[in-house]
Image 1: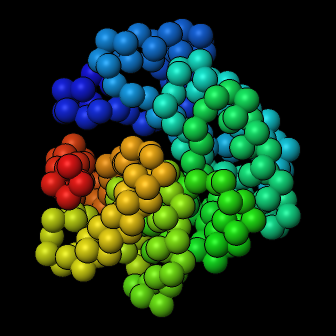
Image 2 (image 1 turned 180 degrees about the horizontal axis):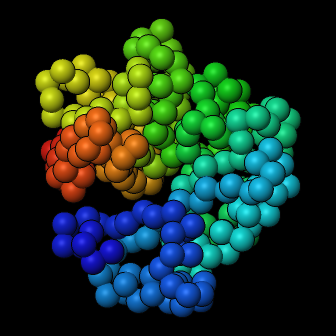
Length: 258
């Protein structure tokens, strides 16, 4: 968190699973995060990714979601970004899970956005459209980079689905993907100019929708380390500097959206 504060970010987002590596016990880890939050003044967003032993069990996913939501509440998180359930759930199971998760978040007084993430309930734009129709209050954490891989093409024929998902989003993960992967090596490279323009379009739609609902525009510069980031064969040398990459993305977001 201190590094993020020095870089000039307004907040941090981290997976709650990381708490297990920060201290010898959960209570100490929570205290450390809260102390760092107080020291830096940063907002804390939590990423809830449930991975029970039986990955296909909605009940086990929900039990883990309840546990992590309690921790998010103790951290006084401003947002929960949720990797919701599993892509193997049928539509009825998916709807039941999302309704249950919404009630859990509400009970804790937390704002939860369900991420458009591969391997999860919102794995693709077609199913997400059906779930959005059935759940008018659900808001998304929009990470279009995952869908770009799933549809495996420039999604010009799917713009209505992508645009509607952007309108239904309460948070954005700002990473540029492409047809064959969820992260371009560097978005400043002119070869990705067309992709950058597409993502800016979706993020602008999301920003406008959030502001129309009276919400602040929530966005995380989210370029990640390997295996998201490409590396050189054999040496494993990274093709870009991760800090610089996210700094570049943050600066573009400030330039475009203020």
